[in-house]
Image 1 (cartoon, rainbow, N blue to C red):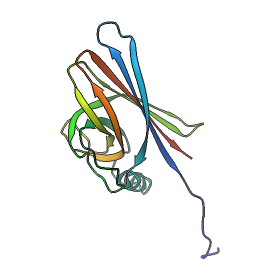
Image 2 (cartoon, one colour):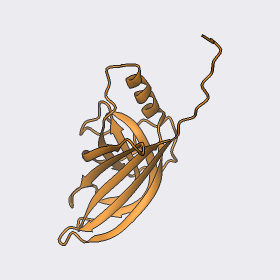
Image 3 (cartoon, rainbow, N blue to C red):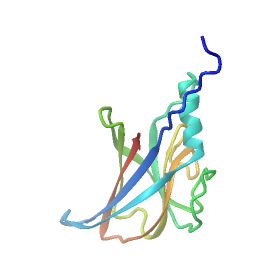
Image 4 (tube, rainbow, N blue to C red):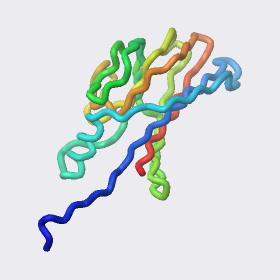
Length: 159
């Protein structure tokens, strides 16, 4: 066995998040905005710990939006200023394409105002703001009102 053998394969994680606004009365789609988001170092650690048969789970369980405006930093672990958080409504994995798809939802009375950041959370995430391990984060420019619902669809592609 060659002790000096090196594996030089690079794995890339890419995140996309879409904001889908619907009229609260009719359900009609009002607008859709899409952003790239950046993967946090804490998510990479979460995956590595799980691969080492750690006791954590890699489930992504919450989506949160906030009003902070700082640029993404890979060492981020929380949003700057978390406004609202919602449990993930559905999640799926397409193993043939190595894509994880996640969906979150905010009703008419939730997450209203100017939204400038979003993140997905897992591991020990709960309904408590700033809880759990940050998966990814994006700086956004959105505004939600009481006359709208908001569905947030995210994907993480592993290539």
